[in-house]
Image (cartoon, rainbow, N blue to C red):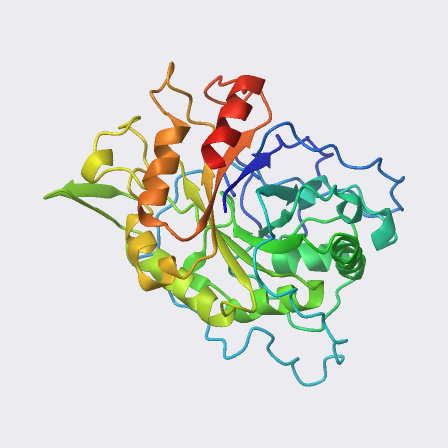
Length: 373
């Protein structure tokens, strides 16, 4: 089962000073999976937003160099739905994931940008509840890996929610949860995941599994997407690639798979376009200058990596055959050489791409489809 996904360029909302320290904005994106697909589905007409706090400045999807933490310190989690802290309100029952398997048929994955949410007073008024059924995997982006949300908190203040999670919805958490419920009840083949990380939120060394489990439970989601965009340094020796982020990537995947067991939850990851290059027949795959070349190999080959359900390739913002030498078909083959049983989706950006000058055409969309059938 394969698919494609789409990343929309972010609009520029009115700036607002963040209520709590958050990563400095960066230049337009890379990631998660921001985001991605053939002709982008147009969301249903938006209802006028209810009065709400001015939107917070969006995180920009493009990575800025950061030093990766050498060894992760992962918060333990015995259950994907940790109990509320003493004195906190009792959470209402959360719906179980619908089989926790990927949708039947071809996949069309879309990243729902929380910072583009105009705000609504009810779930039915949110664009999220009205997405077309052919977008059958929805990623809510992006939560901080080191978030501090507590199960059952049901935060209604945007400022508190932003500070706790960096999900930048302008609708209260209960409203977003209701929109997810309406979307899934009307489209039973649709799955909704929480995307964690992105280019702005890279503190996976302080991964808070309990917080992510609380968000998944309270929002009624089907799993988690790992958008690991920590800057790395990779070297090749004796035909093998090793990167400074290898141990952390494997540990993150293992911790999240343990917290979100297969068969109950979906676990996905977004990968760099060249992250499976650097060895074997893909040793000299273009472009050779890519900083993420080979970054995902160790995780992909690990037991944790092989336990993933869905892989989405960030096959954009890297040029094309005529500019950088990058060929998305080669990236797809490199991923499938390792992830043979996982669904693999090819990421695209609505043209024109903000870097690399690649313009997606209808014939190319058809070639994507033919490759994936």
